[in-house]
Image (cartoon, rainbow, N blue to C red; front, top):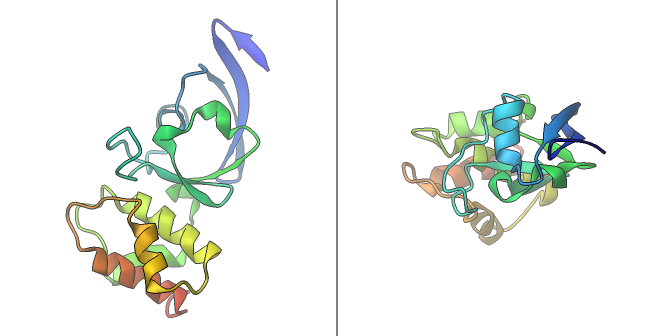
Length: 157
């Protein structure tokens, strides 16, 4: 690892592409994605892990990027909403009107995409538990739950 004036040169993999970055030890992944890579899909919200607007996938699992140091991403596969590339959950959100203002949508998309990959046929209580990791102030969680259920039931591919 190369160091220059308190910064280190690291390589992280985001959306299946490697990036070499100069970072400070205190840099959080959310800021690195937005400010250094221009990937603005993960949104700053609460900056303390409560709202979920900054959710990304780390090795396929949802993680709140405001709580993860960029240095922790080394050697891991990071996926942002920009990396979903027309995943079924995106189409389901549109068809089920599962968003209003859209600020929280990328975080919900990441959680739902991970859920579909990890639990292909979960009971509704598991879906509800996963959705509790994110906050939406505009729309009903019912539409979001319906969107993920349509994907899990194979009605949208």
